[in-house]
Length: 295
Ligand code: ASP
View 1 (tube, rainbow, N blue to C red):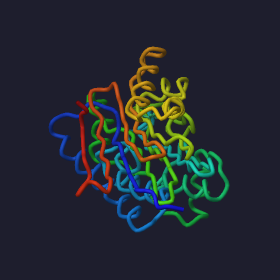
View 2 (view 1 turned 90 degrees about the horizontal axis):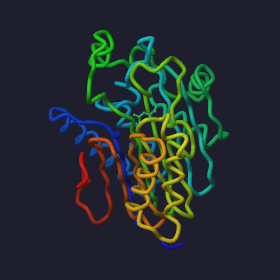
View 3 (view 1 turned 30 degrees about the vertical axis):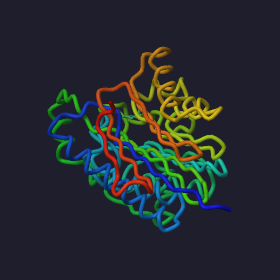
View 4 (view 1 turned 180 degrees about the vertical axis):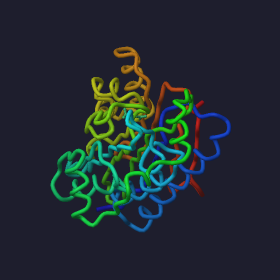
């Protein structure tokens, strides 16, 4: 089989990014794209690249995933993540888990082990049994998030969900999404990020997508699948992404964003929030192209 040109795209959430956080969003997305790109370039799988890129974002408190996630009504970090493989349609997901350093890695293990969604304690138990990195649940709370929670601060530019889509040299597409959910959400609330079809989708026959935004609006629009379906007939991913966001806006007045690759590796993204942090890398570039706003 001919080798395919690899591509990776990451997002750091659809949100408002204030001036003082532009550089951190920029740097975080760039570092994530670079981590995944390194793997793709050495012939690694799209799944490994997506996991590596999302791990970078989960370690960076600029983003609402892993460390630095927003806090729920009880002042705790509870996270969701999912990953999907476009070759086999295998998927894995965790929701409302605590004390897991990299939720995306638990999702990947599930995808490779036995596709399923594990919530709360069973997700944590699975991570432990698999030897994945655990931590005290408080270790995922950043100082900034703790302060904001204590003060019940009305912050405009909260950190936001992360995601990644990659195409490897074998032509496989993988999508992944990881989130701390919505600020102040009730304990146990799960949004779209762990839900295949809504928070992510991958199918080698069409493309792959990761979404971010208001989960309660993303779910009924099945946003990721809506974007992927719009790729049929070789529609450009930018147009497909825009179609999905316009549908969400028209039908449920939601706010969201999505990143998309088609099976040829063409790139697209769209959002109707103020900003969305995005980085992508291809063979044609010296370093990742990074955006916090799309013209
Ligand atoms: N989609 C996530 C959720 O609803 C939140 C986000 O993307 O900001 O849990």
